[in-house]
Image (cartoon, rainbow, N blue to C red; front, side, top):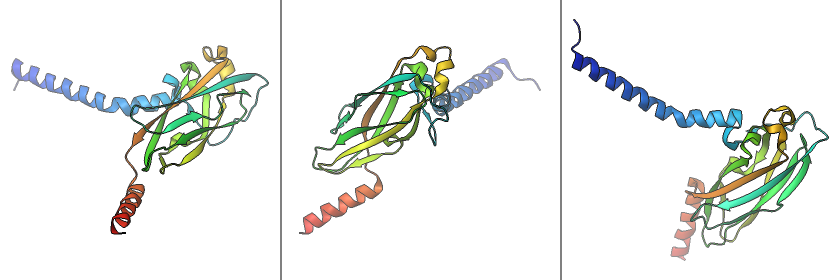
Length: 193
């Protein structure tokens, strides 16, 4: 039994809508994976250890820090720039301060500019891998351990990069359950006393 033209058109339309919905749903995780693997969009790579090779050629790395609107912390790099040999492991610190009278949780997003250097800027350890909770008046220095992959010198586009900028933006997130429970317990004991 053949379908009527209206039924066939309806089924094709539903098929297109379902396919487009599935593609839209999968696009965010796929794009995130693509950026991490290729360095596209300035997404740095992540490694367990430093580079196996250190070149005699150097590169300058600058550091920037900013806060998302409404984030009450103060946040800045302790050191504005370093010059390292390509492949050499670097260690720098960012400082965060919570000037409020309550605990604040934050998460940092990051980016590397120029974008073609993103896949060659490799983080070994970073405060941005986890959420951060600062207590009232707490000031912390948070480390970033990184290197610039020696393969940058042979990449068609990235081999001309002489300077890389690593930028972080902190934004406020909900307190983790553990911190929220401690805050609630403190508030309860204050009311009782």
